Image 1 (cartoon, helix red, strand yellow):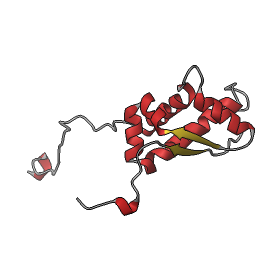
Image 2 (cartoon, rainbow, N blue to C red):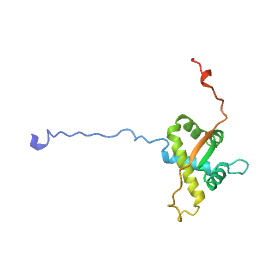
Image 3 (cartoon, helix red, strand yellow):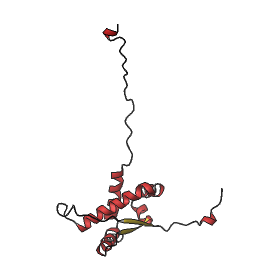
Image 4 (cartoon, rainbow, N blue to C red):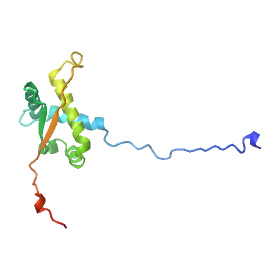
Length: 138
């Protein structure tokens, strides 16, 4: 019977559930941070784009971001940044670097390969702080 294929050991399987998709891919999150840097404004002033431009001109490679502005722009993104800063802060810094590249080299075909220095993001918040000595056990 083995020669007829009756004893052939074959395993068949099928997927019955759709494949898991990562809800917010890193590229999508980085694009949201980039949109925030490029598009956030107060009173027709592009705060972060202008701040980054000024810092780049004096060779200070950082951007100071008010968390309240990020909450106003995209509350979900701000919550994700608060919950997982170790994952999202490097993506935010990559978005700042891309924004710096667009500021320094607006023509996408020329000078695109020039090295742009890494930029640091510093977060500022007006949230209520609790000192360590004031923490209590519930």
